[in-house]
Image (cartoon, rainbow, N blue to C red; front, side, top):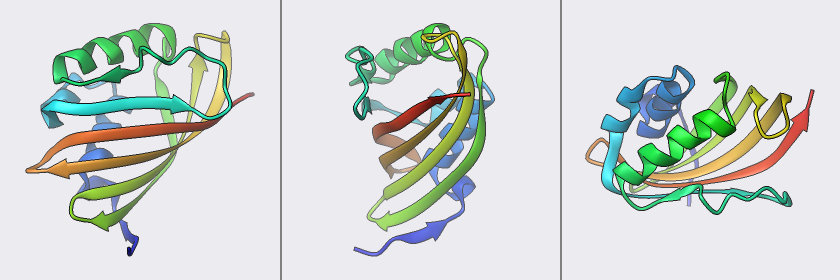
Length: 135
């Protein structure tokens, strides 16, 4: 498998993340109706069992709750790197800073996202939060 560096704006995941950071609800226009979405945390005891969706409507509910509980003041992208893996698969490294509602403080978070896109829509999303560091 070859990893080809790709400009984030040339990928659906890059466009979705840009709209997420901007709190632009038009991000959902880039999501497949039958999206397979999940966020996991590595070695973190935070309950993320609700951070999954099997439809676009369920994802709207998850993102709404994320906005209330996790990102009450939004987020800032510090870096975003995307790598095309072929056949619509993209590996993304995302570094962000935000006020983490769960902890009540500013944090840095680094995540790895494996996604798939087809016909201009994101239909698979697996994010692993590698760590959340208090600032």
